[in-house]
Length: 404
Image (cartoon, rainbow, N blue to C red; front, top):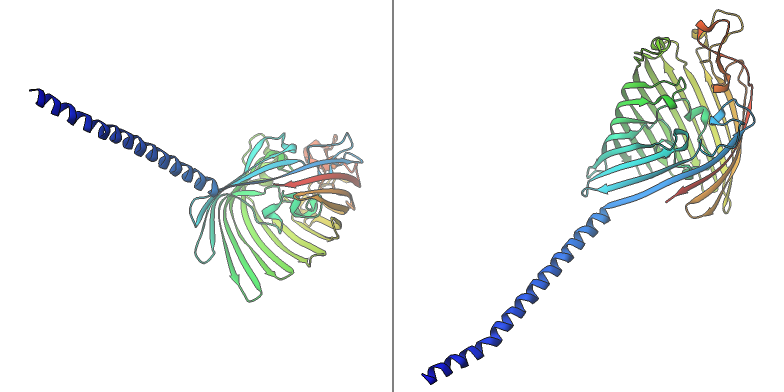
């Protein structure tokens, strides 16, 4: 009996270290499994972060005019810190090797800093380089359309008001295709689009919201060494059914508009010359306009002085002729503008611009300026007319452009 008890005691003593070892090994395995899980989680997070890209841009502008004509949105009341100021953030997420999602959120001082989505689209790039995008996109009317509000991307304080200010809408909802054909020393890019757009009332020359349906067309760009050439054509139908503005229904509803544009840029490093011509044709009484600008800049060290000449003119004023002597329709437009300034790249990603713009040559029209638009007290039934209050204007601007 004593021998049996002793045998049990010895067996238990020998087994105890094995049990302790098993418990220790199990704890070690669980610790390693937890660590592996943490590493996998970190790897997944890092992979997600690597696919997520954020950048942005901003402009802080100060401007003032010598009168209340309203050129570029400025008057002589006080220094305006909001008209040309904006802040934007753009995010891109790489869904996979071929697909990505992009969104650009922008807030503008002239719109009371209300955040708006300017871009929101998904794109897919095929193996041959062709890219298809769908969602809310920038309308590719002009040479500067893709970076229209990225002031850091061009030398002057703002794009030509006479060319870029004629079309009030900048983005649309729909699809586009980017397809490039590479030659030995050059590239030809085609960009057809299809969709619809809306111009907000605060961006409209007439102060009303208007829908653009069946927006379609194509932009073509040819890049050859120092030279870039561009041509574009777009068309759309308008829809306007605001019962509170019956005076504008006949003017805006169910009209067809066409946009024609050509442009060129020569950039050899020190010198850069850029020019664009556009023509807009709209059915009936809404003005058909021709616009043009040419700008040149010379870069040396951190400084880039520039000059720009712009011009705009409505071509069908006879369709809006008012049969009352002395009264001219507010939609008749003619204006020339002369800009001189300098850009100072004083820090990486930051540029300070000083600009002086003078506009005149209205030729008895409003010049397209709000300060010259009014209603005749004797003949209010004829609608908005040219008051002729201003025949020129000076605008002084200081702009700080930033990219990050």
